[in-house]
Length: 241
Image (cartoon, rainbow, N blue to C red; front, side, top):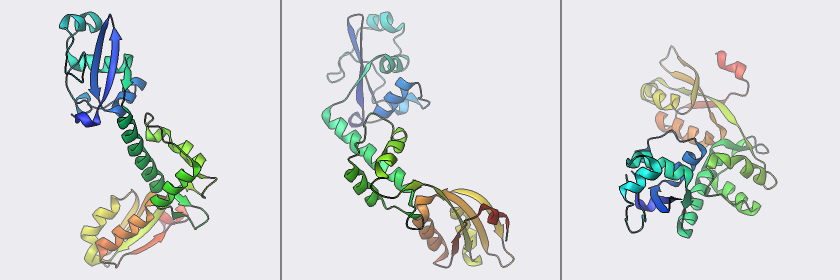
């Protein structure tokens, strides 16, 4: 379950009765779109249906039976969300907007590069300043994934930017290969790996281009600064030694 502070109220009025449930805002939107595939218990603040959630008042069971054909809250909650309206306060709206703004900035920074600077990553601070300069406003009621394309369209007149992936080869010396390779291979999509005769490990990993600095940091961390790394520009190189 989630806390009351994280929940919004979904309200349905029917047959002269009011029914309210407390639910995570993103989950509520997903249910409305028919896209929710999680565990309902994880996204509600109470396994209950209210007449007035702020006071804790509950509707009579006869009303539940009349409108929903059941008194089971876990069966009723999705129906209230789907058929009803999502109620959010001004404070909740601001908090949701700020949370989604941060998620959007981080998502763009993870995937975006500067094509005019040899595909170097854009720091989150630069993305944040550019979004402000572009006047882009995050919609607190829309999933972040649905706002990325619009954000990129707003950013392009302000900074050179594109989404990309990078393929990176890394070699860990023998004394660090045993423990280090497990972390490196999990950083992204492992394209190829090979143990060398001297005990060193070579791996080729594909990951979002905005994470290049994190990749270098991890390679240095697991090898005490002795890792060799290079960007693979041509995917034909992956199969060569």
